Image 1 (cartoon, rainbow over the protein chains, first blue to last red):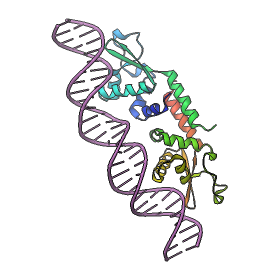
Image 2: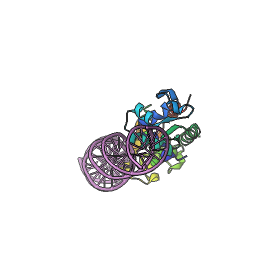
Image 3: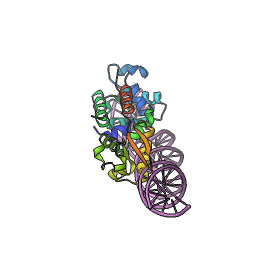
Image 4: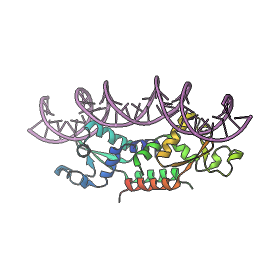
Length: 102
Length: 102
DNA sequence: TTTATATATCGAGATATTTCGATTTATGGA
DNA sequence: TCCATAAATCGAAATATCTCGATATATAAA
């Protein structure tokens, strides 16, 4: 749990939005036939949804990954990103115990 | 609850430290005789503890205040800052419901 | 009213982040 | 092998943050 990286990753509305969208696969276009059964969302779909450039999204997903909020898995030419719920919970726990009195 | 301002305010290790220190008055030098009974810690003590310039700390406390994490109260020439526990809890609630799935 | 002290505000240089388009790398298909 | 597509990396301009010292403001004390 790198609090520094985690908070920096959250310090951007688009990145927070992406984390929210990733809660539900149906926020993105339906998976391609060759992707049925695979978990996560590929960069292109996130880019389309966010309306930002490919390089920006790739960068953002890298930051979210380094912060531990998402996991990446490569399948062929695509990289699928999905939330890392365990780490997200761990982060919330950590902020809480840092911020909360007692 | 301005999530934007709140996260930005937390996106700095010194400001997070200050919030932690403010949990316990004894992290700072004892209050002056003329301040006994008054709540909070004055800027000078925070500055001394943090080892940053006076203007930096004044700026930081302003950011923490705008984010709702602290309350300021002026007594004479001193400004006393203290945590706003209600708002801190509200923030934690908000991050949690934004980040957590379900 | 002058002086001293505490804090806030201003202006600026250094550093970091944002975001892009261009390029590179990885992979799969013709 | 050559081409197409997806994603990552690079380089850069615009903007924001960090942090300071200097100055301004507010208050109290002499």
